[in-house]
View (spheres, rainbow, N blue to C red):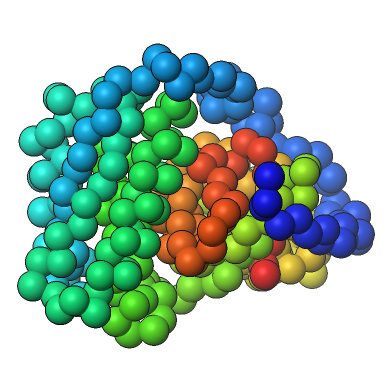
Length: 254
């Protein structure tokens, strides 16, 4: 494998915590459903199906583009099986030929999302949402040279790592990140942080099992972290993408 490996230094998190215990959600039945090893025989896959999607043309209309794309997926959903091989073809949709390289990158990334999510307990609609969000994020950043943020909310750059030192980065909406914290977050932090709980906690305590509620963090992955990971790393030949939080041992500010 040619995936680059990095080692992020461990912080002395005990200095910032009153209670150094993982949240109970990381030992739940829901967590166990998302953490399983799956071995797939390539010969068991159904034949290849090609999905044709259009590029956005109005980069300010996230809702218009994503509604249209979701409606398209709904129409073809009955014909798609989770053990189906999918390829994607991007229609330039009136954009000039300078977007061809971008469309090729999007095609590869959409296939990557499908293969990374279809054997996990995502619903079809959740997978479709991730794909259409990714396309819009990628297109918007190509046009404006900055990451798209719904409602222009503040974005932060996160670094995610697993026990094998595979590392990736992505954007996340600051307010949504804070909503994924465990409900009793103020009870586990020292007094200094207890007064002003924010995502800046992740500068000092970057262990997701301690800071986050698993189900809330999983929702955030579905909502934006997967799509942002793919967009952030789409130009890499062998990008590291985490499709659920189960394998993470570090999640903090980049």
